[in-house]
Amino acid sequence: MAKPLYRSSQNVLYSSKYHLVWCPKYRRRVLVGAVANRTAETIHDVCNTHDAHVLGLEVMPDHMHLLVEVDPSFGVSKLVRLVKGKSSRMLRQEFPHLRRLPSLWTNSWFCSTVGGAPLAVVKRYIENQKVA
Image (tube, rainbow, N blue to C red; front, top):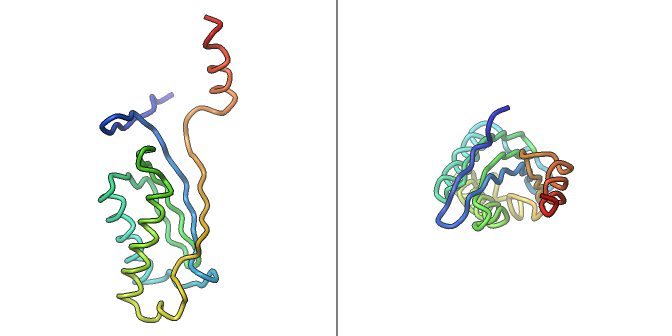
């Protein structure tokens, strides 16, 4: 079994990977062709700027999947806000047909942690700390 890789910031050693999903407003199928390519470029730029590591990215016509590792002290919600804000602004400037939507993205998004040990193993580890 491979040893988990950890990243570190000034005061945190972490392995925080998240699967994120969000959709365009009204789940419109607008993320196609040049829009999809530019969306992916913008997301990579924002993540690189904020030292978040993109592990996977898939732009579907009506939703996005992003697998990312981010410093927990920076926060996954802050990263999502920055990614959605910057991509919406850039895409609506470059592709006028997207301005017909009141906003590019919905307010909601999905987040799930990924990787690490199963919950039962971690729970057992914590419970056994005082036993030794």
